Image (cartoon, rainbow, N blue to C red; front, side):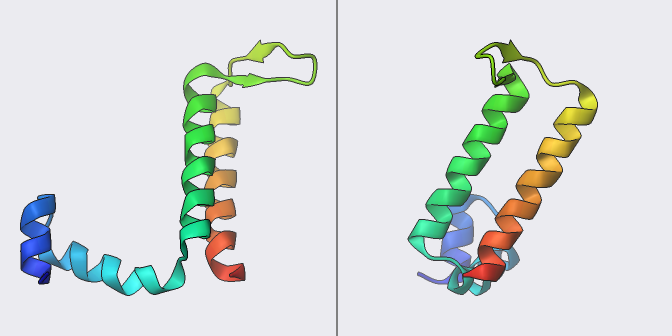
Length: 83
């Protein structure tokens, strides 16, 4: 399908579709699955906290949330660079 058609279906501007098409060559299904899993785990930790080494749920404070987000972005960036 053309960029215009895909953009209309997705409800985004055509330049977004073009940018995604250029990025897709850097990712394979395994990498996308790993990134999605990492994002899912990060989302859960931000919303509900994490389980510490004693098995107790711990809510993250603002500094821990920022650190987790930064680490997630870096991990996903490394996935793309190293593969």
